[in-house]
Length: 120
Image 1 (tube, rainbow, N blue to C red):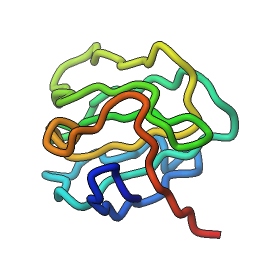
Image 2: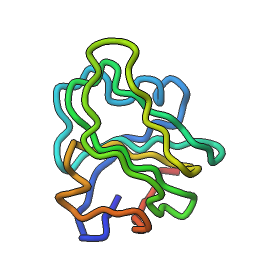
Image 3: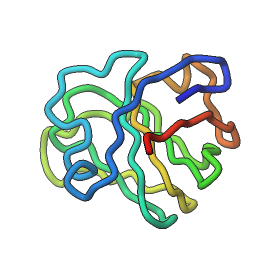
């Protein structure tokens, strides 16, 4: 995945219910050049929460053309229920989770287009 400032991020692909459900849970940190790309079958307003996530994350929703449609920056780990759920205002087909502060540090904004190569 390549961001508009040229930063490359290697992403794990979560394209099954099980992988999407686990996400980045139980990891102590996410390196600056790594993340997770959640792939869905149809566009929708997919909600994300931070249960069992140990480090703040940026959550970036993308449309079918890999354009940013919504961003939550520095979503805090959730240590007690109910955990807040972050839901975009617009439908998305993909969501990428990155280390907290990534969007600010790399100038990621709604409307930006990312370059993504999915494995076949």
